[in-house]
Length: 250
Image 1 (tube, rainbow, N blue to C red):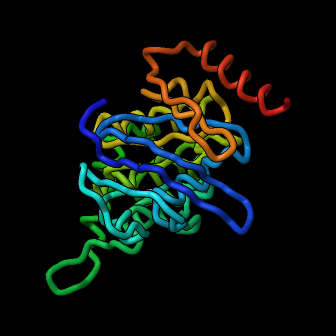
Image 2 (image 1 turned 45 degrees about the horizontal axis):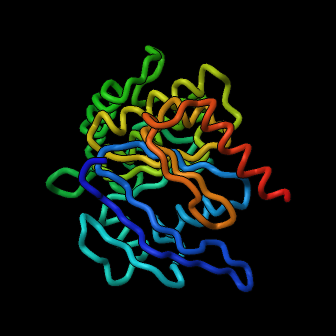
């Protein structure tokens, strides 16, 4: 693992009487894609909401580049460059591609007016860098006219333009065709190529295995395994997940 960007130590989180996370500790390097996997109810969603600051942990510690953060919340996560792309992508379907990239963080000229020309130029450059292939896509393309994979790409591109250090992809391949899924996987790879890190969450283990450098397996609110891709084959990962599921049924 490269330099540690983010570290969580001994994190606990409860919702009433339900213990969602129990003694969770993990490290995220500064240029890796981590596959976060586990069955429904394993604690994945709660964990990423802790990382992004949406949920406040009951106890535990957070470190950025080795420095302890006294109080971890949304503003800390955002200032640290942590961006989450949720399943709905938080895109405005009626707006153009460039408008969605810069929504809420518009480029303005010296007198405070939106510099639309600059936004379009930056969007076109970003699209090329991120690997958009269709010649039919332009900065003016309306989001509703983009495919599912392209919409994921727009959301990822927006995070990367604003220099995200860590991009969390929450089930980015759900309900996508094989072709569209491959587009998302290619976009996810661009995160690491551009020097950032990613957390890739998906129920389809094949999708995770194709893009991740390391796998963190969760079960019942705990991390039960943390293994680099170089140490485990796809079939071994499936066997490991199957074994964990079978233990839960006992």
